[in-house]
Length: 229
Image (cartoon, rainbow, N blue to C red):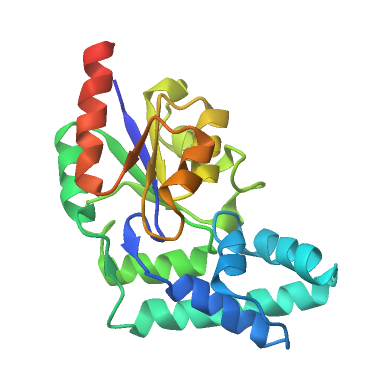
C-alpha cells in the first residue's frame, strides 16, 4: 500500500514548458557559450550545478569551476524571476486534483526540485500548496548530498515521515533518471510522466512501471498495485 508519493516539480507538477531549458541556454550565453535546448536538458534531471559541470566538460572540455558557478548564478537569477513574474507559469493540469485524491487515500506528498531552496520557496509561496495543505513538504537540490539517480531526495522525504520501507513509496518524474532514482531507493512504484521534453522511447530507457500522459492516471496505478498486494 502506497503511503508516500514523491513527485518532481519542474515539468511534472509544475508546467514550465521550455522555460527552464531557455533559462539554461541564456545562462550559458551569459558567459559566451552557445548550447541548444537538447543540451540544456542534460542539466535538468540533476542538481543544476552538477548538470552545468557535465555540459561544460562534455561539450566544451572545460572544468572551470568559476565559470560553472557563474552560469549557475545566472540560472538561479533567471528562474527566480520567472517563478515570481511569469504569467505563463501554472500548475501542471491535474496536479492539484491529484494532490486531493492522494490526500483522500491518506498518502503523504513531497515535491522535489533540481533548484535550490530559495527557488523552491518562491514557487511554493506563489502556488500556496503547503499553506493550503495540498502537499506535506518539498526537497531542494542544495539540501542533499547527491542528486538523481542517487536516492538521497527520496530517503530524505522518507526520513521526514518516519517511513522505513521504500516499497510503500511512489516516485513520479519526467526523465529516466527519475525512474532510476526510484529504483535505487527501492520504491514500490516508479512512473514516468510524458512532459514533451523527451520522446516516449527515451522515457522507456529507465524501464518504468508505467508511462503516463496525464497526472490523473496515477491513482489507477496505485489501485492496481494494491489489488496485486
